[in-house]
Every structure is written in C-alpha cells, then in structure tokens.
Image (cartoon, rainbow, N blue to C red; front, side):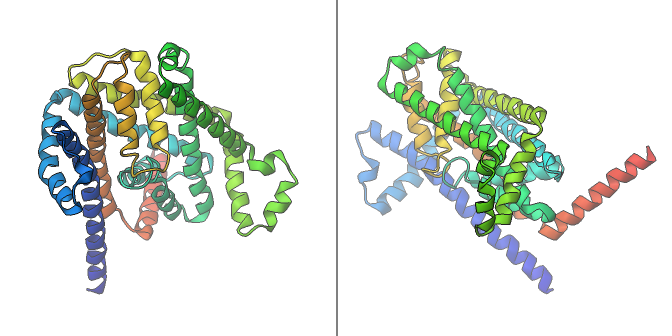
Length: 375
C-alpha cells in the first residue's frame, strides 16, 4: 500500500510540474501573440498593470494563436511537426554513436526516450540546450558504472552538434556575402557566428585531444591535485577516446549536417504554409545562425531572442517576408516543437525508475543474446 501511495505521489508531483511548465511555455506564446495584436492597435502590452496584462494575454492570446495556426496550410503544418520529430530522432542517433564510443549502449529506444524528456525541459530552461542537464542526469542514472563518461557524452554531443551547425552557417556566408554586407546587423551576425565557430572549434579540439592535459602533459599533475580530479580525468579521457575514432567523429558530423538541413526544411515548410516563396541560400544561412544564437542561455528556449532575430532577418528585402509574418512563423515553429515537448512530458511522467530501467536493459540484452544463440 505504501509503495502504491509513493508511486501515486511521484506521478502527481511530476504531473504538477509538467502542467506548470507547459502553462509557462504557452503563456510565452500567448504573450507574443497578444503583443502583436495590441501593437497593431497602438496599445503597449508591457505598459499595462501586471494583472491586466496576464488577463489580456490569456484572453486574447489563445484566439490570436488559433488565427495564426489557421493561416498555415494544414499539410505544411503537419509536415513541420513531423520534421521537428525527425530532428529529435537524428539527434538521439548521433548521441547514441557517441555513447557507444565509450562502451555504453542503452539502446536506441532508451536514448530516444531520454532525448524526448530533455526536449520537454528544453522548452522551459535557458537557451535551447537547457535540457542537456536533464539528459546528463538520466544518462548517468541509466549507466551506473560509467556515470562520468555518460555525462561527458552529452557535452561532446552538444559541442559537436553546435560546431557543425556553426560551420554550416560559416560556409554559407560566402554565397550570402552581398546580403551580409548590405546591412550592419547582418555584418554583426556574421562576426558573432564566426566567433562562436572559432570558440566551439577550440573547445572541440581540446575535448578530442584530451583537454589541456592532452596538449600540455604537465597539466595532468595539476589536475590530479584538484578537487574531483579523478572524475575530471575520466571525463577528459572520454573525449580522448572519441578523438581516437575519427571515422565515428565523421559520422556524427554527417548526422549533424543532416540535422541542420532538416531544421532549415522545417522552417521552410511553414514559409510555404503561408503561401510564400523565398530564396534558398539566405535561409540556409539564417536558420542555423538563429538556432545557434538561441542556444545561448539568455531566455527560456531562446524565446524573444529567436523571434526577434527571425523578425529582422526574414523581413530583409533579399528574403521579403513581412515582420509580422516572420514572428508568426517563429511562434508556430515553437508551437510545433511543443507537440514533441508534450510527448516528452508524458514520458517524464511515465518513465520508469532507475532500478526498473537497469532491469529492463538487462532483460533486453538477455533477450538479444538468446536470439543470437538460437539463430
């Protein structure tokens, strides 16, 4: 009886957290939708008293979001939602490759479950990489014997993915050079992307070489004297292990390039859903750039940062989308991601406890071994 009560309480408090976080995410969307509507009427939403502002957001926001969604052709909206899901699947596959480089193999299903739960928390934590904290937590729980290595794989996966997406944007600077040089803000955007690419490249190089101690061997003696030095050394060795497998690094980079292309296509489906046509080259530069900057821990899931960047960049004459439609596209894209966040929230409620996960993995390995022997 006590065990059942504990289980019910566990589900109840998780359900409460899930509901609060989803309400927070929708409040952010409704706020932006309400602000756009009131701005058109010459009313400043943020100048209202807080209680009136909240009432206006929840009274006007849902209806305005509904009108925005109705404005998108349903086939393109469904395609956009599907492509969002595909980015999570490709990301989970890429992470699984890195896990396997450390001798860890929770299986694709478990990896995808953890990625979906992380995507759920990404919707509310700072930046678009906030869910990596939860990803590390669950990865460490599933892999008891190599927790440090499991957590390190999350960091390696993030750095590899960010480096590749930044590199993709850097390569697209040249075909879009006239666009970039035509506007001061796009010049600054290119400078920021180049700076982030250089920083990510340095971090990745040090990670795969084994950190500073891999470049300066004497640094290992200093590292050994530091608090938790053993754990730091194990994390550094995990990066060094991946660096010794260039073919695997190449596969993860290819996976990241595929993921970037899917992200561009996901936004393009919404552009087409509004009956618009845009040149491809600028979108190949704009979308990865916005995603990478939104990953910085400035606002929950990059809200506001991402929307304003899309509003400015997509409304440039060379692309030709109106500012209002550009914001609508950004918000609908976020709404599409919330579909998968909701699924991640359900998994967060239902995901089995640590002991259950370990037992299930052991059973799966035993079943796989039995099938191999019978064949």
